[in-house]
Image 1 (cartoon, rainbow, N blue to C red):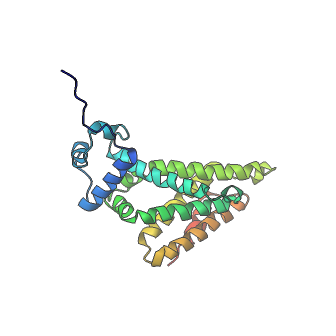
Image 2: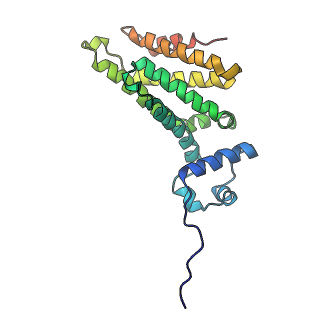
Length: 222
Protein backbone atom coordinates (compact mmCIF):
# COMPACT_ATOMS: atom_id res chain seq x y z
CA UNK A 1 0.00 0.00 0.00
CA UNK A 2 1.59 3.22 -1.11
CA UNK A 3 1.62 6.31 1.05
CA UNK A 4 -0.76 9.03 -0.04
CA UNK A 5 0.53 12.56 -0.52
CA UNK A 6 -1.06 14.99 1.89
CA UNK A 7 -3.32 17.51 0.21
CA UNK A 8 -3.15 19.88 3.16
CA UNK A 9 -1.46 23.17 2.29
CA UNK A 10 1.95 23.64 3.81
CA UNK A 11 1.86 27.37 3.24
CA UNK A 12 2.30 29.02 6.62
CA UNK A 13 0.68 32.19 7.83
CA UNK A 14 2.93 35.24 7.69
CA UNK A 15 3.48 37.93 10.29
CA UNK A 16 1.82 40.57 8.10
CA UNK A 17 -1.20 38.33 7.48
CA UNK A 18 -1.74 38.01 11.23
CA UNK A 19 -1.42 41.77 11.71
CA UNK A 20 -3.86 42.48 8.87
CA UNK A 21 -6.37 39.94 10.18
CA UNK A 22 -6.18 41.42 13.68
CA UNK A 23 -6.61 45.01 12.51
CA UNK A 24 -9.56 44.11 10.31
CA UNK A 25 -11.26 42.03 12.99
CA UNK A 26 -11.10 44.64 15.74
CA UNK A 27 -12.54 47.25 13.37
CA UNK A 28 -15.37 45.05 12.16
CA UNK A 29 -16.28 43.79 15.64
CA UNK A 30 -15.32 47.04 17.40
CA UNK A 31 -13.62 45.14 20.20
CA UNK A 32 -10.52 43.09 20.91
CA UNK A 33 -10.69 39.29 20.42
CA UNK A 34 -11.55 37.36 23.57
CA UNK A 35 -8.71 34.88 23.17
CA UNK A 36 -5.89 33.82 20.86
CA UNK A 37 -7.70 30.51 20.33
CA UNK A 38 -10.89 32.20 19.13
CA UNK A 39 -8.99 34.69 16.96
CA UNK A 40 -7.03 31.92 15.26
CA UNK A 41 -10.10 29.76 14.70
CA UNK A 42 -11.98 32.65 13.12
CA UNK A 43 -9.03 33.44 10.83
CA UNK A 44 -8.14 29.91 9.72
CA UNK A 45 -4.78 29.66 11.41
CA UNK A 46 -3.35 27.61 14.23
CA UNK A 47 -2.31 28.97 17.61
CA UNK A 48 1.20 27.72 16.86
CA UNK A 49 1.32 29.96 13.78
CA UNK A 50 0.25 32.94 15.88
CA UNK A 51 2.81 32.23 18.59
CA UNK A 52 5.57 31.94 16.00
CA UNK A 53 5.43 35.75 15.82
CA UNK A 54 3.61 37.08 18.88
CA UNK A 55 3.41 36.00 22.51
CA UNK A 56 0.11 37.75 23.15
CA UNK A 57 -2.30 40.36 21.81
CA UNK A 58 -0.31 42.95 23.78
CA UNK A 59 2.79 41.98 21.84
CA UNK A 60 0.85 42.08 18.58
CA UNK A 61 -0.48 45.57 19.28
CA UNK A 62 3.01 46.82 20.10
CA UNK A 63 4.33 45.30 16.89
CA UNK A 64 1.71 47.13 14.82
CA UNK A 65 3.08 50.45 16.08
CA UNK A 66 6.64 49.23 15.50
CA UNK A 67 5.66 48.40 11.93
CA UNK A 68 4.27 51.91 11.39
CA UNK A 69 7.67 53.30 12.43
CA UNK A 70 9.74 50.79 10.45
CA UNK A 71 7.75 51.26 7.25
CA UNK A 72 7.95 55.04 7.62
CA UNK A 73 11.73 54.93 7.94
CA UNK A 74 11.99 52.62 4.93
CA UNK A 75 9.94 55.04 2.85
CA UNK A 76 11.97 58.02 4.08
CA UNK A 77 15.23 56.34 3.07
CA UNK A 78 13.88 55.65 -0.42
CA UNK A 79 14.33 59.36 -1.06
CA UNK A 80 17.73 59.47 -2.74
CA UNK A 81 18.46 62.85 -1.15
CA UNK A 82 17.63 61.74 2.40
CA UNK A 83 21.27 61.20 3.44
CA UNK A 84 22.13 64.75 2.39
CA UNK A 85 19.33 66.27 4.48
CA UNK A 86 20.05 68.27 7.60
CA UNK A 87 19.00 66.68 10.89
CA UNK A 88 15.97 68.94 11.00
CA UNK A 89 14.97 67.90 7.47
CA UNK A 90 15.40 64.23 8.40
CA UNK A 91 13.09 64.62 11.37
CA UNK A 92 10.55 66.52 9.28
CA UNK A 93 10.65 63.81 6.62
CA UNK A 94 10.10 61.13 9.21
CA UNK A 95 7.13 62.84 10.86
CA UNK A 96 5.45 63.66 7.55
CA UNK A 97 5.86 60.04 6.43
CA UNK A 98 4.88 58.58 9.79
CA UNK A 99 1.63 60.53 9.97
CA UNK A 100 0.82 59.65 6.37
CA UNK A 101 1.19 56.03 7.50
CA UNK A 102 -1.12 56.65 10.46
CA UNK A 103 -3.65 58.40 8.22
CA UNK A 104 -3.73 55.36 5.93
CA UNK A 105 -4.61 53.33 9.05
CA UNK A 106 -6.58 56.02 10.87
CA UNK A 107 -9.57 53.86 11.82
CA UNK A 108 -7.36 51.32 13.55
CA UNK A 109 -5.20 53.96 15.26
CA UNK A 110 -8.23 55.77 16.67
CA UNK A 111 -9.65 52.46 17.90
CA UNK A 112 -6.36 51.40 19.45
CA UNK A 113 -5.92 54.66 21.35
CA UNK A 114 -9.52 55.06 22.50
CA UNK A 115 -10.51 51.43 23.18
CA UNK A 116 -8.65 51.58 26.48
CA UNK A 117 -9.40 54.59 28.65
CA UNK A 118 -6.53 53.64 30.91
CA UNK A 119 -3.62 55.89 29.91
CA UNK A 120 -1.02 53.40 31.14
CA UNK A 121 -2.47 50.61 28.98
CA UNK A 122 -2.41 52.90 25.96
CA UNK A 123 1.20 53.82 26.67
CA UNK A 124 2.07 50.14 26.98
CA UNK A 125 1.27 49.49 23.33
CA UNK A 126 3.47 52.46 22.37
CA UNK A 127 6.51 51.15 24.26
CA UNK A 128 8.35 49.88 21.20
CA UNK A 129 7.50 53.00 19.21
CA UNK A 130 8.86 55.17 22.03
CA UNK A 131 12.16 53.28 22.01
CA UNK A 132 12.48 53.58 18.23
CA UNK A 133 11.75 57.30 18.14
CA UNK A 134 14.12 58.00 21.01
CA UNK A 135 16.87 56.05 19.26
CA UNK A 136 16.22 57.88 15.98
CA UNK A 137 16.30 61.29 17.68
CA UNK A 138 19.34 60.31 19.74
CA UNK A 139 21.24 59.40 16.58
CA UNK A 140 20.42 62.79 15.09
CA UNK A 141 21.70 64.78 18.05
CA UNK A 142 24.75 62.53 18.44
CA UNK A 143 25.58 63.21 14.81
CA UNK A 144 25.20 66.95 15.38
CA UNK A 145 27.36 66.77 18.52
CA UNK A 146 30.16 65.03 16.60
CA UNK A 147 30.47 68.14 14.44
CA UNK A 148 30.88 70.46 17.41
CA UNK A 149 34.39 71.12 18.66
CA UNK A 150 33.53 72.57 22.07
CA UNK A 151 31.94 70.34 24.69
CA UNK A 152 29.84 73.24 25.98
CA UNK A 153 28.06 73.43 22.62
CA UNK A 154 27.04 69.77 22.68
CA UNK A 155 23.50 68.87 23.65
CA UNK A 156 22.45 66.00 25.97
CA UNK A 157 21.27 63.07 23.84
CA UNK A 158 18.88 61.76 26.50
CA UNK A 159 17.07 65.09 26.86
CA UNK A 160 16.73 65.57 23.11
CA UNK A 161 15.47 62.03 22.52
CA UNK A 162 12.91 62.28 25.32
CA UNK A 163 11.82 65.63 23.94
CA UNK A 164 11.29 64.05 20.52
CA UNK A 165 9.02 61.43 22.11
CA UNK A 166 6.98 64.10 23.90
CA UNK A 167 6.75 65.89 20.59
CA UNK A 168 5.42 62.71 18.95
CA UNK A 169 2.68 62.37 21.57
CA UNK A 170 1.79 66.03 21.16
CA UNK A 171 1.43 65.71 17.37
CA UNK A 172 -0.42 62.39 17.72
CA UNK A 173 -3.02 63.95 20.01
CA UNK A 174 -3.45 66.88 17.65
CA UNK A 175 -3.80 64.58 14.62
CA UNK A 176 -6.48 62.52 16.40
CA UNK A 177 -8.58 65.67 16.86
CA UNK A 178 -7.75 67.30 13.51
CA UNK A 179 -10.83 67.85 11.31
CA UNK A 180 -9.09 69.85 8.58
CA UNK A 181 -9.15 68.58 4.95
CA UNK A 182 -6.35 66.09 4.32
CA UNK A 183 -5.16 66.87 7.87
CA UNK A 184 -3.48 70.04 6.62
CA UNK A 185 -3.32 71.55 10.11
CA UNK A 186 -1.41 68.51 11.39
CA UNK A 187 1.20 69.12 8.68
CA UNK A 188 1.52 72.69 9.90
CA UNK A 189 1.87 71.53 13.50
CA UNK A 190 4.59 69.06 12.45
CA UNK A 191 6.56 71.83 10.75
CA UNK A 192 6.18 74.27 13.64
CA UNK A 193 6.94 71.74 16.38
CA UNK A 194 10.03 70.33 14.63
CA UNK A 195 11.32 73.84 14.09
CA UNK A 196 10.60 74.61 17.75
CA UNK A 197 12.53 71.62 19.08
CA UNK A 198 15.55 72.45 16.94
CA UNK A 199 15.36 76.12 17.93
CA UNK A 200 15.38 75.09 21.58
CA UNK A 201 18.31 72.75 21.20
CA UNK A 202 20.25 75.28 19.17
CA UNK A 203 20.42 77.52 22.25
CA UNK A 204 23.28 77.04 24.68
CA UNK A 205 23.07 76.14 27.45
CA UNK A 206 19.78 74.29 27.65
CA UNK A 207 18.45 75.27 31.06
CA UNK A 208 15.87 72.56 31.63
CA UNK A 209 13.45 70.12 30.06
CA UNK A 210 10.68 72.50 31.11
CA UNK A 211 12.10 75.14 28.80
CA UNK A 212 11.76 72.69 25.96
CA UNK A 213 8.18 71.93 26.96
CA UNK A 214 7.25 75.61 26.88
CA UNK A 215 8.66 76.02 23.39
CA UNK A 216 6.88 72.90 22.16
CA UNK A 217 3.46 73.46 23.65
CA UNK A 218 3.22 77.13 22.69
CA UNK A 219 3.12 75.96 19.05
CA UNK A 220 -0.26 74.30 19.56
CA UNK A 221 -2.70 75.75 17.05
CA UNK A 222 -6.33 76.57 17.77
